[in-house]
Amino acid sequence: MRKVFDKGDCLIEVLPFIKKFYSKTMVIKYGGSAMIDEKLRESFSKDVSLLKYVGIHPVVVHGGGPEIAHILNKLHIKSEFYKGLRITDEETMEVVVMVLAGKVNKEIVLQINKSGGRAVGISGVDAHIIKAKKKLLEDVDLGLVGDVEEINPEILTHLSEDGYIPVVAPIGVDDSGRRFNINADSVASAVAIGLKAEKLIYLTDTDGVYDKNGRLISSIKISDIDSLINNGTISGGMIPKLLSAREAIEKGVKKVHIINGKRFHSLLEEIFTLDGVGTQIYEE
Image (cartoon, rainbow, N blue to C red; front, side):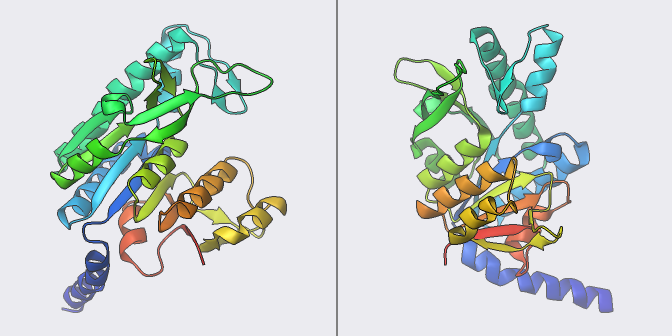
């Protein structure tokens, strides 16, 4: 009987969070191992579907770099990178669109729908959701790599309010109709700002941000981000995530979370428990 009461207590503890976040929007950046491992894909899809059924509006923004690389290799198209960014010529862009807006996006939609959700796959080109501009660097031409100039959230809002889960591929378009390959983290941040989201959640392959002693930092104030970068606590690929998190919060997103997508149901644990499982970034 004790196990029954424990489960009941657990469910009761979730109730205040359901009430708090009811009808709120949460943007989830989906990437890393959570997209590759079959069981993790199933777990993520069930979690997102559950969020929708309890009255939360999840919006999924996904990456797909490994799948793009795989298809480029099969087609014998050489990939070049500069500071982690894929130099994207016209031929490469055709593959990026095919893989992100086609294969990867529709696989995510299919999995969510199999789990009981009602997902709709779109890219930033649809309804001009992501207005993009070419990313300009002084020392190299990245080709069709873009930055987000503006988010038009209208279609995402309509889909969410009508009971659907939008799944967004990070491809943008400019006024002349040129498509751009955009970093999915940046797109997720911009979408969260455009939707005035309650939370922006990054699923990664790490538990969150660690201190110099290898201990997980559960909370970071945006005012501390610069010092954590300067003293080397935050480094590498975590730097752009934290900078994007700070921008999102400064522009109206309530909290940003970095959690481990390799952990089953980490999304639910972060949202529906007091302690959470990753690192939360917030304003004082």
